[in-house]
Length: 237
Image (spheres, rainbow, N blue to C red):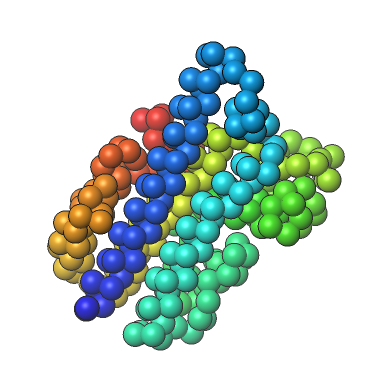
């Protein structure tokens, strides 16, 4: 496969994972709402209703796993073909910024409109993995969180709900497309749109919009829209 085909395949696979995860979250939300109407007493409904439970922490961590997997696969391949000065994308926001600035002269903090939200999602995932989701000084320093009086919440569980998890997944999906387009621009890959559309014709990617690089929705079945403002979600448009 050509360089363009390899990176396009990584893009499409990552977007499919994001879309599948979005469908999973929507299914839980819809099922939970339908069950609330009947006021059932069962373990799953009780689990989802608990906004600070282990289940939601694990679900959120998965959205950042999609982020990490894309970074690992995408830049490992680029490194093998093109070479990179700084080799690995960390899960520490400051190191992520340095990676892109060093290798691609890309100021992610200024150019990616959802950077603040992505940064907080990464920091939240890290505190889940390393401190069981309890707020500590590391999370406070990492996230510059929007939480009011965060210093008074040290030791408490970081707030979670399904809407937050859904939005963090949207942010990851938009990050993947943003980074892909920036790398395409950096290497001046003029024919990449056609390559993506051709590969998207494969039945495995039947839910991925072949025109995803044109700024429209990137999942066909779920009608996910591209977020172009950090204060908007797809439903706000």
